[in-house]
Amino acid sequence: MPTPKYHALSKPQVFTSSLPLELKETLEKYASKHHLPKNKVIEQALAFFFHEQKRKAFVEGLKKYGHDKAMTEMAEWGMDDYADQLKKFPY
Image (cartoon, rainbow, N blue to C red):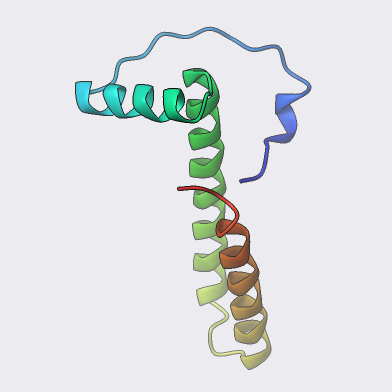
């Protein structure tokens, strides 16, 4: 998962949120098992979520060029690379 570029530049900000009990418990178990602070797990999850949103927008844009063989091949190459990157993460 890519670390957001803004992470090193910005000062962390505190905010309050709520989660369903089951999700909160899952977060706590995951953080404990992997010896991570819960906020780091949430930060990584959000970074992954926003990365996925950008990827989906990119794929939708490429669909417009789906009839162009060169564009299709380039998109397939990019998705293979993306899949390889995902294999590096534990979830």
